[in-house]
Length: 80
Image (tube, rainbow, N blue to C red; front, side, top):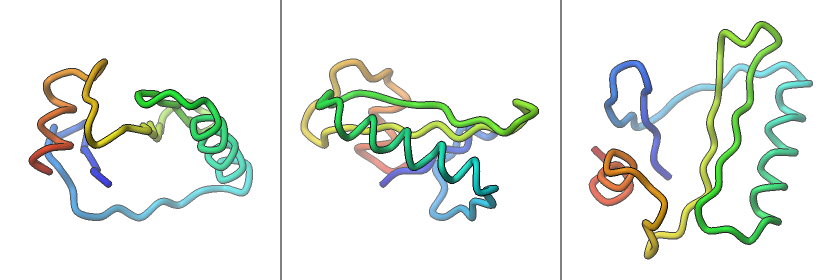
């Protein structure tokens, strides 16, 4: 698991998510779709109703960085 702060462009060690029931359902559904797709590099965006907050979830393979930008590769390899 890697967590990136989009605002600061720094790796984080932990976050707390406060989700409404609908947002939790959307996250659950998105994760299921990502896992079922069989694609090693895939992502989904979950937004609140106002589109002011966003969670991006990414499924990746630790041995295949094809399709990732350099920032993402650094985060996965170095956790920084």
